[in-house]
Amino acid sequence: MKAARFLLILPFLSTGALADDFSFIRQIQVVDGATITTDFPLDGDIGQVLSRSIDADLAIFQLYTTWQIDPSTIELRLLDEKAVGATIPEVSIETFSQDPYVPTTTRSDQPYGVRVTVSGLNEDPSTPNYTQEILLGRGFNEFDENTFVPTGAGAYYEDAWSFAGNGTTEDFAVTHEIPGGTSAWAVGAEKHSVYAHPDSGLSVQIASAEVIIFPMAFARIDGILEGETYFDLPDTATATLEAAYPRSNNYVRIYPGPQTLNPDSTILGSTVRTFGGAPSDPNVPQGAVIEIGSIAAYADAQGDGEYTIEVVTETPFSGGAPEVLSAVSFKVDRTVKFNGALYIAE
Image (cartoon, rainbow, N blue to C red; front, top):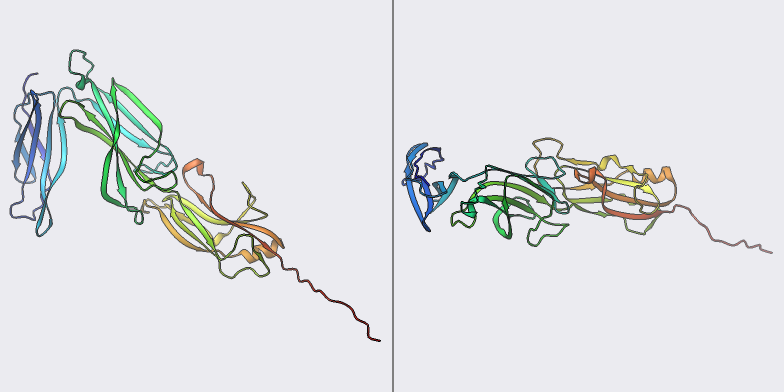
């Protein structure tokens, strides 16, 4: 290919915290099997450099700066990366789930989707195979299981998929593979990345998209025992809700009889907890301790018999259908019985 040179104008972040603070652009290319790396120092907030001649199908330009972690620790950080080459296709990738929230978020028991659109991919059979393909890889980032924020740890999965040809590819049934996770409990994010020039010795990421994965909520009911018969209902009962989905409606409901599907129930109004009602609400699972009131009043109106209390959540998944997180069935029997005998004195 014909050699070319480029004038690069890139904004960059300057730390300003170090006496020897510096930023630079690194040019990387592979020519005749040899990796050639050249660094171009930058001064000021806008750096302009004239690259060395590009003698390969692909050159990568990386923008670096130093960053002061603490008084004795300096870290080199990659701020940006660009690929230049005649055989770099236009690629877009997006993730999506039943929750329309942005960034894409889903629940550990739910599949999500990935859509990759490619145009301008080289289809000339006389050129190297690596210029006619792109590679799709997937990795994960770990989240703290209590705060649900990234820990900085993660890795790439071993599986990867190659694509040849232009067009759109979709998968609507992607399930997470976060290590140690299950369908009920997984916390983290999965990142899907597209690379140009796989197997060339200098592949480069040209597009990526992420999906955040949170666990299923769970709950417990305290103060009312399963199968117990009550003359006087307890004054105090609570429902403890944990890891409720960031956009969910949660409540406690009661109905006569044993536990059943799709009951004709009454929501105990004081127990409703709604999360994600405002754009500023945090995109992390929520918890609450809910006092369950109005049980005695409901039983007074219905009379003695068996009752069921359930903790329920409604989320963007499964069309917003109610999902029972915890349940307890009990009986109310306030009939007073007297046992006695009649004696006649002579």
